[in-house]
Image (cartoon, rainbow, N blue to C red; front, side, top):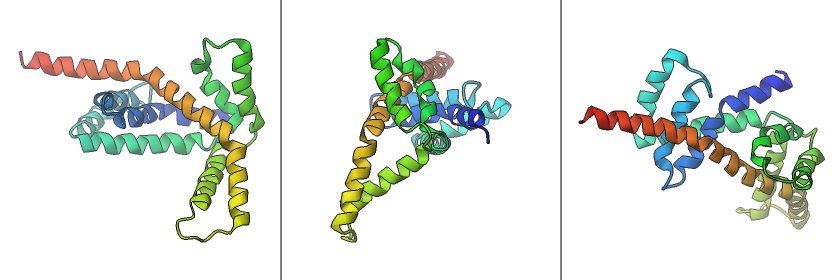
Length: 193
């Protein structure tokens, strides 16, 4: 798969990430279904005529919304993990508007530090390092834990930065989710009048 195809694939599932974030927040969870509706449409995986069945089935229960949110967030993360870190600057570009050139350059420079590294490989290293430091079964010696600490330090700025940018990127998608939810709620309301 080409670099562009990988990028397009993870972007197709972006509303799955937004749905998962919305579903995890009690105050915003009502909009998770709307994010899934957008995901099923042209801004997402573009299910076409099949979108209606997907939406009806998914929105039939809170568990359906939760399961679909988790599933499509997983797909988003899987496909995003296949791209190079250097390609993330473009993805987050809209979240960087309003920053001056120096501030924006600092963020992009952090992506450039690891530009040729696969994001999924970095995330896997960080997850393994965290596990080794937690050491629930007391399996790891001091040398392994020191290497794990070094690994987490190496990627700390990148991962913290991505966490913040992901929150804002998902918030950019929130209006579409709210609009889809509002449309469904108001149709339901008018059908009862």
